[in-house]
Length: 115
Image (cartoon, rainbow, N blue to C red):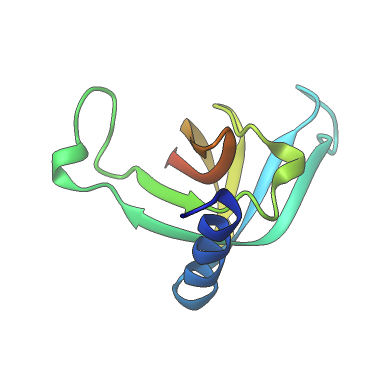
């Protein structure tokens, strides 16, 4: 039987092998100089462009899909629209945040990002 811990461990291993690292960012105030934020650096993630069959509604060709494990970002769960990622040094906006749960445990985060 597959349990949440084994699913998370499998995802962690796959991202370590084939993913890239991103920074997960949440601003904690609307303004400020510098603007206060929480950063979690070196988070393994799979980043890919959207597929042609995903181009529906408000989704744009330049959007990207990001898959992450909850392992390193537990302090920022749930991810939400308005959160940011730094991908290859560029800040992108979370447009959609999906949390995949097994037995009421988040085992995977799938984001649509733009920017």
